[in-house]
Amino acid sequence: MNSQDSNEDKDLYNGMPKDKYMNFKPQSPEKSRTASMEVIVDHGVERAIKALKRKLIKEGLFKELKARRYYSKPSEEKKRKLKESMKKRRKDEARRQKNQVL
Image (cartoon, rainbow, N blue to C red; front, side, top):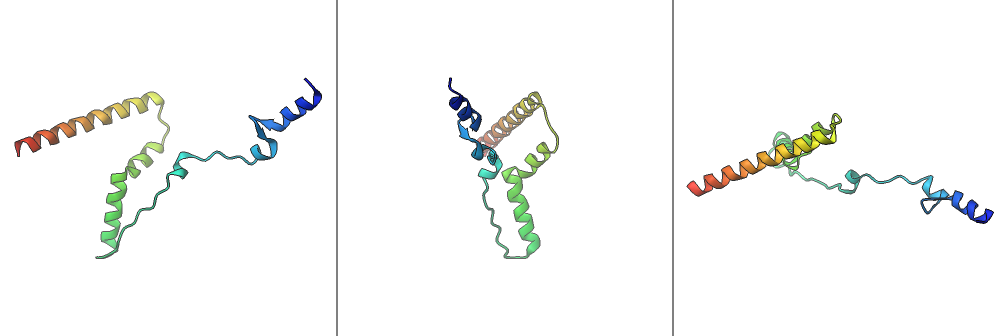
């Protein structure tokens, strides 16, 4: 190995030139999925706020904020997701049975 090769290795970090990786900041997945939400104000601001809140609840924003407030271990996350999927399955089954009766 030449001394020139070792100098090149020092200037590279995972194949990236030194001037690039010093300023490199990985983008978080939350930033990449920014979407706009529009609420039309027809009958007053209070109604628009209610509509916005309904949309945010439906999107799961409040649930996600609550979950991110504290760190939860991966095992706890697994249990929570399993519990949510079971709840969703029971709900869907109840809806199907209700629609069959009608």
